[in-house]
Image (cartoon, rainbow, N blue to C red; front, side, top):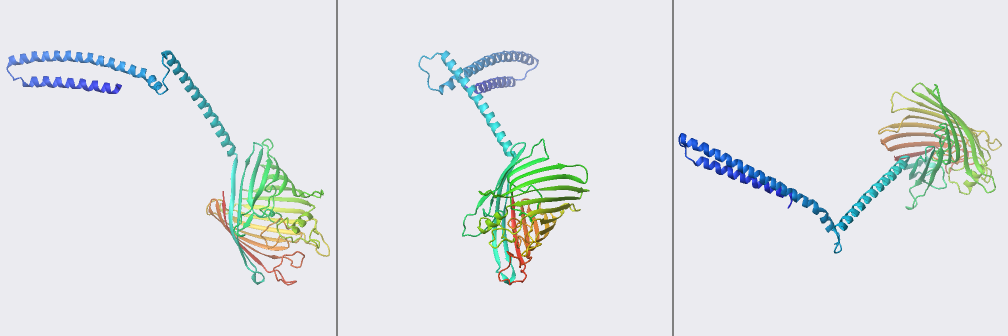
Length: 503
């Protein structure tokens, strides 16, 4: 029997017996008639007998309780002794004649196996936890980010050209972070024509065909903790030097190597001094006439009070064997901007050589409104190796100026901006700079933009480009269809409405 059931039954039995005896004695006492003093003496005697009887019965009950406690203790011992037997009964029956010693030995063996299993499980769990922790630490060093942009745009140039409307999409995804304490790196993929280095856009057309995706970036940077002023980068990487769309498009990622030496200073107003070397690889040739660009930039950051920061920089970038670029355009191996530089009659070679001398001044001002900072910058580039002959001369300078008010960080942030560009024909190589202008060189361009941060990671923007060819009489000048010789190029209006989601 179960211990609890036996104990409950004993208590109920004793309680019932004591209650019955007390009730009987009370009934007897009440039923006796009341008599005088003699009756009272008898009642006293009777009560004494009753008390003695009650005492004896209580003593007897105590003895019975002790006996029942002994019985319960025996039952408990039996239950404990039968538990291993019950557990053993779940196993196949032991061979006939098995001794108690054999059973006890088997139980000890089983117990040792259980302890071993538990120990192994604990060790395995610890190893799994260590691996999970190591994986979490590894993943914590990297970040996944990218963006998706959907665009509607049109081209309007009056009666000289048919209106054009199209929808485009740009998709970019990548991961970057710390490879170790001293090394950084990342890999990015992006949509876009694989032969077009300055645009990741894909036009939504082509009878629902699949869109191309390629590796957009892949690099390793050595940035030692012991020498925080040093930064060495190799691969296909984001710009490590200051530049604007005047010389390189925002979507272009250069290839090659970069060395950056930056020194922070506490003394006002000079806060930073940086030196950057770059070796940009363009085309490798089996004949040994490789195309590349090499140069350097010096920049500094000046801080004036708490509100104004100015970053001036100057760079030299020398392009070697750039004719391979012109030849690639002719052979259609390069689908960047149209060639508007001066070329020889077969267009396989540039008339000019290219040595960029680029000056940038970037100023950022904190206004009384924290969500409306002001930014102004100007970029002036001169090609020190532009040709001057009977065909072209003095086409060596370019200017880009921009002003922006506001930011796009938090929800409902807004930003207004305006840009102006005047780029002469051979001021820069036309295949690699801003892709949305009327023409890459020999152009006069205005741009107005408005951005609204709809959500923390979603931006709605409107951009209006208004531009025309600077001198339509130059060779390779971009002109509207049916434009007569000597007639100015009509203004081309290009509107872009974008929804950008970042993650």
